[in-house]
Image (cartoon, rainbow, N blue to C red; front, side, top):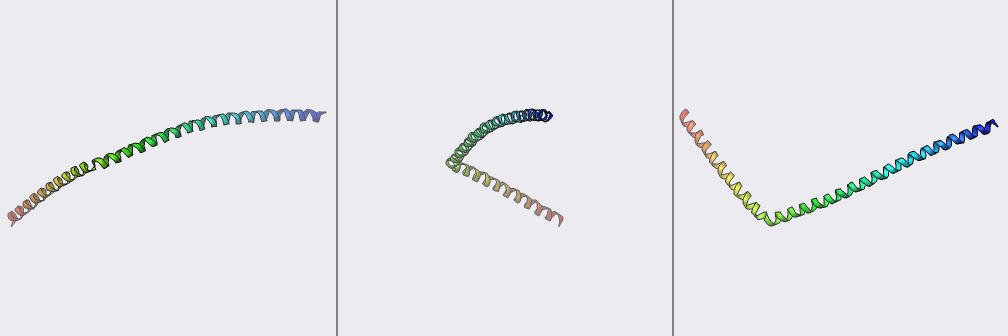
Length: 105
């Protein structure tokens, strides 16, 4: 008779443990589903923003193709201006160096 009481206690404790484990697993699954939904929403937003960025870059490329000639002309003008400026500085340095050579000799 005593063994039946021990068996009943064992099954009662085992049943309670199984119910507790199932409750914890259910809670974990619910939180996992929430996380997956939030992740899915985040991924959708990233996709939308990626498409917008691709569109912006496409528009920028188109603008550069259309107005590339203007930009090239401006860079050519600036480059030629800087080249002239560097030549005048070099000439001034050369003249001042030759003047100093004459004074010292």
